[in-house]
Image 1: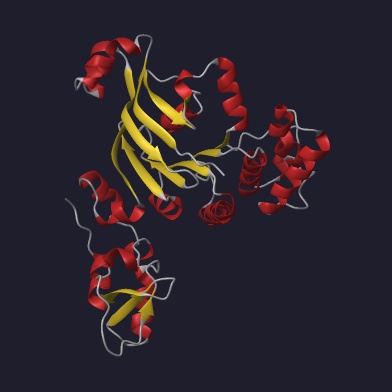
Image 2: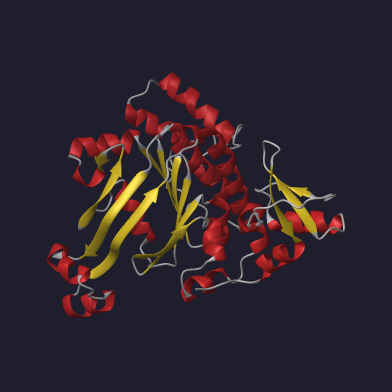
Length: 343
């Protein structure tokens, strides 16, 4: 298991032949529009600082053109930064030599794309073993590992099918199996489920969460879909025009949007499924005969249902060790589910 997260520090990307020349101007406050109009260069990323936690899912979210795909491609240096660093296990990916970078890409990272990127002339098994072949793993061992992951993503029986014989959802399962078979510490997922129908998409999110519970990979997941971000992300960073406008847990973002842009983004969210009891409870338990007991990780939707069923307007909160740690009133639950606060 990876013990290090990914540290992105002061990362800038200016697209154009003389990007480095304009870095001081951008640092000095030159806007994306001005850079483009005056100098014909495009500001891709501006001063990105994100600590991506080890063994967790970091979601990077934003609308198209916000810089999220540019950002994920800096982690395995498919795009060269103008300035800044991407540190993993004490090494700056941006400073690696060609051979170090090749080893890092081959052994430490695996990527899952929106367009599946499967090799059409290879079967499910052939696609899944591909990364291991590149690493020089023996044929039998590669197939054994690949079969395990094909089974894990629910494709047993389809090993000899070709990509064109599979639905989109199944093709994306192959993409996931291939990435997992490589046994990389870091999984980079760029809009991996965006092309799928909603139900299949939810299905794939479940597959990913189940596997993540077991593997604890360091996953960077790019999406423009807020529900997906909230469901998958241990942490979320929201980009706009190449800048991070807010980062934190899904609950932090939903409860305290940093600005009107994010408040607008989150106004349709089903808050009852995002905010947990622990986030809004009072720190003192209620004395006397309270029937309802909740756990801090219970979502508000669950809390409201339980309290309604038992016709109680109060509940105590007990942690996993059995200790009473707080209490909650139905009004607070309803308020948090309904209102969005903005700064």
